[in-house]
Each structure stands twice: as structure tokens, then as C-alpha cells.
Amino acid sequence: MQLASGGSSAGAVLNEQQEDQMTASRTVESVDELKTLVGQELGVGAWLEITQDRINAFADVTEDHQFIHVDPERAAKTPFGTTIAHGFLTLSLLPALGHGREGVRLNLSPKMAVNYGLNRVRFVSPVKVGSRIRMRTTLQAVDEVSPGVLQLTQTQTVEIEGGDRPALVAESLTRLYL
Image 1 (cartoon, rainbow, N blue to C red):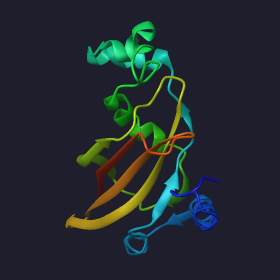
Image 2: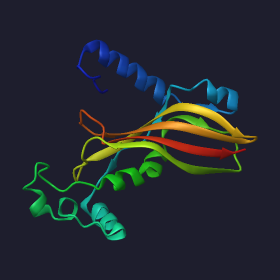
Image 3: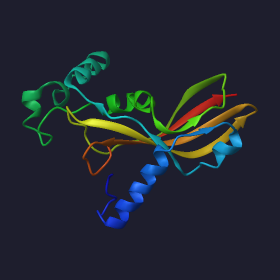
Image 4: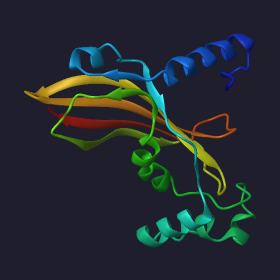
């Protein structure tokens, strides 16, 4: 259980109730049923450790070898005290962080689903090497953009285990072709 901001016991009870509701598996099989979930958390993914090997591999792929990511000795002298993951590495992990998510399952049988982009992204807190992160997903909107095509707007919040603030908050768009 995580304490809500302020750390009050009432907040702890509320957060515990939210986690109980979130982890309860539910399968959504219609668009109308999905629309009833707007504004609600759909679920939370498993924890994923951010290793130096993963950070280095991302640095190689993106050619972003800034020392705060890849040089532990120099990074130790920064306010972070260690290397940190690239913000875009954390962002790129959203699909992986959503796999195996506990909570609501969508069974709308789309012909395909497409990542349509992002409306907003904020890198709120650095992810230090060795940290574990996970993602919470909240459904913000379900819109029919054309016949047989739904657009889901979701808030993706990447938490850092033991952290007070999230690593990242993104508003993502997914299109489902039914």
C-alpha cells in the first residue's frame, strides 16, 4: 500500500481501496462498457528494474552518451549521485510497462491497435540506475473518430518504487480499428 500525499491514514485507506479496485480483474467486451470507465484507473503493471546495461544500450541506439547516463564516476558527483535513465528511455518503455498489467482487460477484438502519439509528456523525476518503475493507466476519453475507429486517451503515470513523485506522466493516444 502507498500513502497518498500528506501521508494521512484516510489517504492510506483510500489508496488501499483504489489498489483493491484496480487489481480486480475485469474484462470489457463492448464500447459502451468501456465508456463507463472514463476517469477510472484501468490497472497497474509489474515493476521493472532499470539497469546500467539497459541505459547503455539505449545510449548506443540513440547516440546520446551524456555522462549523467553512462559514466557512473562522473554522475556520482552530480546532484543525482549516480547515473540516471534517459527520459526518452522511460517513455519508450510504456508499451513494456503495460504488458501483463493487472486490472481491466479490453476484449473488443480490434483488427489492429495503433499508437497514435502523445498529447503531453512530462519527465517529473529522474530514474536512477537500479530503481524499479511501473506504470499506472487511467482512461481519460473514448472517442469514435470515424466509423469503426476508436481513439482512447489515457494518462500513463510511471512510478518509481519508494518515490514521492512519478518519473513520468504522459497522455497517450491509441487507435483501435474495430
